[in-house]
Length: 195
Image 1 (cartoon, rainbow, N blue to C red):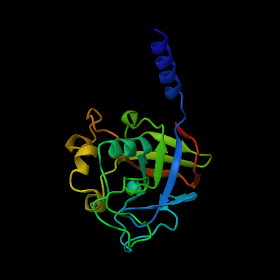
Image 2 (cartoon, rainbow, N blue to C red):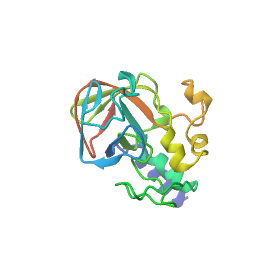
Image 3 (cartoon, helix red, strand yellow):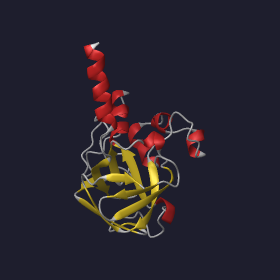
Image 4 (cartoon, helix red, strand yellow):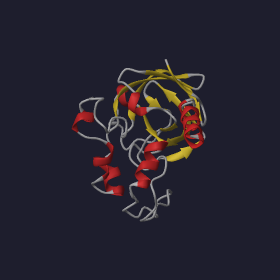
């Protein structure tokens, strides 16, 4: 009985955790992105983010991406490892390394945000300045498959997720895209609040 009460209390405490920014990432529009201390977010996306070319593949509805720290832990537990040696890049990934925040190409790695409960159209306040509106699930970049192998997609999304079906068991696993409603700066540990 005592053990059950302790477990119950732990569950209650976990439910009360604040959603927050765990890490901010910047780089090419592919993978991986590297950690930065602060992101300046404008209506057209991340300020000074490197573009592959002048014709960016991102639209205004997909100019910021979010992925959860909890999903990284799930991928690690399922045995996903780096399959392509990228040690000649500044990211120093080697074959066998576990996935880390930024490796899936997200700008914002979150902690404690309930992705299964996210709906397209939800608006979030991030820190004191930025507001983002969720516009859809983030589909893995081609580079994700190159680095982690072809099966990673099966862990992150399915056809139902691609069609916006929140009843899929994989809903939220691939992260989300957001549209910038209010510009500003985001810092590590900023609180994320659903409006």
